[in-house]
Length: 213
Image 1: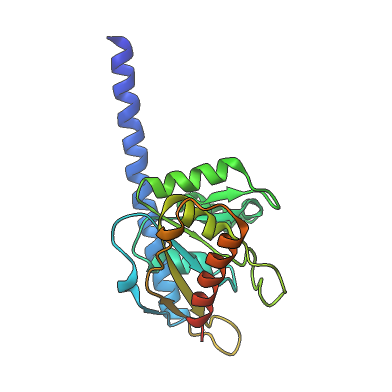
Image 2: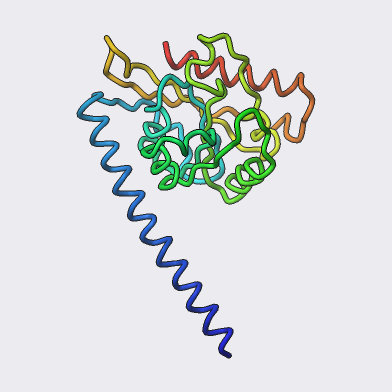
């Protein structure tokens, strides 16, 4: 009987923590949205392309530290980002990672824990977000596009929402976030061969680039 009471109290405590965490997330998202609206005159296009329910993977181009929070506050979904572990070295970014439940990945490592947590997020019907470039301005630096998005799409059967982010740099402060139509790769579900992963990755990246023009 005593153990049952303890379990009930623990469940209540967890629910309260989750409740206040949601409130905190909402406040932070609201503050970031207002900031981006005022400072960057942020404009959102194609939000109707984002399904309101069900697992999806949002993939965007990566130009600056602004990109993750911009997607977070405009997509209208509970979203978890895949982020490099180095994020925790910057206090503000560490704070955002905590608030937005970021999934941390060690540098140059296909960490099993991060992969499992990402697949769990999709299995729960939530939204996973990542940048195929793998790093800021990856394409401009000549970096190879990562196949993580393709892997998760084919493993989970989730649709991919391409996202193009324009502006936010010197000479062009106005930010425009454009969401494209969902990409369905269900015909390749379960495929693991490099050829298929490369094909899906290219299609995702081509769609992202088209939305930045």
